[in-house]
Amino acid sequence: MAELDTSAKGGKGKKKGPKKASTRIDLTPMVDLAFLLVTFFMLTTTFSKPQVMDIVMPVKDKNPAQEQESQKTEVKQSEAMTIIIGSGDTLVYYFGLDTNKLQTIADFKPQHNEAYDALRKPIVDKQAEMNRGTDISDTSKPKNSDNLFVVIKPTDFSSYQNLVDVLDMMNYTGVKKYAIVDVAESDLILFHNRKK
Image 1 (cartoon, helix red, strand yellow):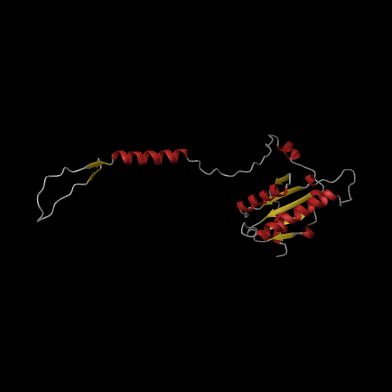
Image 2 (image 1 turned 90 degrees about the horizontal axis):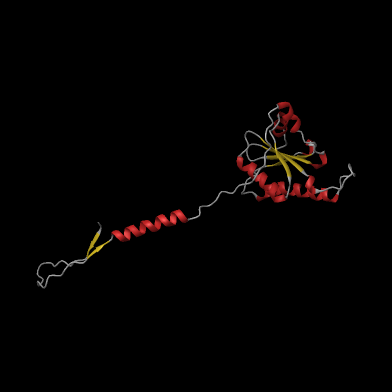
């Protein structure tokens, strides 16, 4: 039991007067109350919730031949964009199958807004082009920016942060159709032979 002694002790040479009764204060209830309050606030505090992004992935079929057939999605070249996420915070993107117009974005990090703008601008420009209908190769249906299909290919050496940032960019720019795909050997060759 914790106690606080407040008695006055006399020194030498002082008159002896009537003896004072010492006052003792029991601190145990105060310590109990302090621990109860700490426990209460720890249990009732709302902890920061992790931010999550919903990604719907298809269920694998049991039959491998049927699975390969079901994984094929036909996309027009004029409506496709490919983003390869490589090592060293480097992204490479191109539209359709035109790898001659390959663009590289270096230092794709949260600290570099220019790198984020370098990815956002071509996506927004392509969406605007699709809304205008400047591609006259197919006039059977009106163009719509919702038809833009982005294929995201992270390599084994890419960082998880880069993948999350690219997915955030899809959400920010309003791209409704995108897929995370395994990178092919031809994509790795394309990434390593890019102009630096």
